[in-house]
Length: 295
Ligand SMILES: [Zn+2]
Image 1: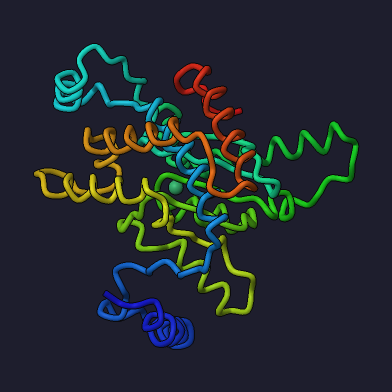
Image 2: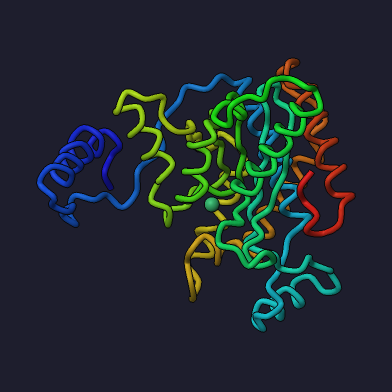
């Protein structure tokens, strides 16, 4: 696999120049399969805080777990493994996102709803951002203040997502000037597009897209990676969305949700209110009906 340095130092800029000036395409051998996430030095306080948000987010996805009842094998497998359990109707892939403001308050939670909305744009991150923009505009309207430009509405905001973002969501976050995106699982099928946007912007002298933070410090990251490895050894499709319909994935989310529910104290005092806030938000959102996820 290409390292980030190899890719950025050699391939990207030379290939882009060749492509732009001479009208030639990329040579297939020059295109890496995946762009690795940049490495950021996070403090232990930041790691703990990110882990609380991701833990709460995974707990919500677990409790809202939806199975595609139109797939006979899926229906049968879940009925056998979890007899009598009433899963949500399948609105879309089991992916969730939080938008969090600069004061570390959750502003919005959204699930992927491709199926329910019959809309290829109905991804968790994109839905959460669209809703947050509405919320911000409404706040400013009510307050009677001068409306911030759309470019500035979400400056200082973060996105937490259970799966590394796709091309659509990475682009939306870039345009919305979301500062950071923290993800609980990698998705090799997206080729590290968020990492590329971030690095490419910086190389061009701009601020870059959202900082992509791979949460490998989060316990849940390992649970999900291990479950994905087990799933990948089986027959059938290997992609992230197939994994997210599997019993292995559901169990991994359940383990993470259990740990989150049992967390009663923080290592760092400054994160105590964050833990309390995320737990309250999760409880409140679980009181809503299946699919009624935006608030
Ligand atoms: Zn997406």
